[in-house]
Image (cartoon, rainbow, N blue to C red; front, side, top):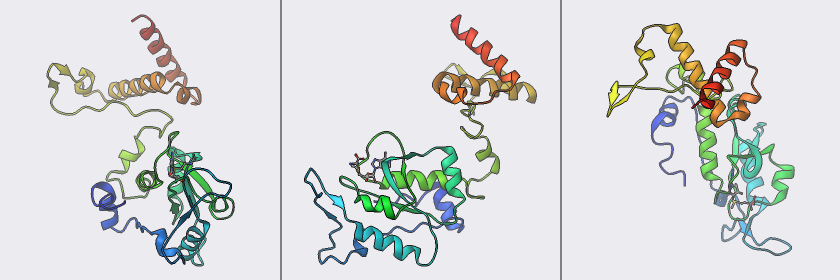
Length: 234
Ligand SMILES: C[S@@+](CC[C@H](N)C(=O)[O-])C[C@H]1O[C@@H](n2cnc3c(N)ncnc32)[C@H](O)[C@@H]1O
């Protein structure tokens, strides 16, 4: 399932430079079962199959060896991945991500093996693999050198508890859709103010919860008030 996922883009470059290392393990290689069966029917009855504890415990223990590597289970019931969590995870020198399938995994994995569960959103995927990919991608961006210019990570959405400001490139006029004049003014203070205003506006419109939780400067508060009034009068 991970086939070509890491064979292009920023992640491939990071792998080539040796900044990160990704190892994919097949649970079937860690089962004693004759037919390499990793799942079984749920006790107590019910639909679907459950991944057995044995191959997951064996895989995680073998990979860990004597090292204390935190393992996380991908699960819709986990703590929801966000910017802060990705940054937190990037501080770990090594991580083990356990992907579930079918109806999920035996609860003993959650209770006794992993450090926690991570969800990539309030929806259910067919397996943990796409979630693992999302985590690898989001976490790798915090490894120094992975994202070209250090600045690009610093200015990203969420860094400051706000969305990123809008970006434009050539042409200046595309089918009558024009790039805001301020970006050609050469006045860096004005450009910064415009960008801040746009970031505040977008966050306020689409993620009011983020604004609520943010400590705003008196200048930001004033701008936000203007934006509110402007929107009301439209
Ligand atoms: C079909 S789901 C199992 C869902 C489970 N029966 C439940 O209701 O919580 C199969 C696997 O996909 C992964 N998965 C599904 N949704 C996910 C999400 N939102 N975030 C992370 N992993 C997810 C988990 O590893 C899960 O064990």
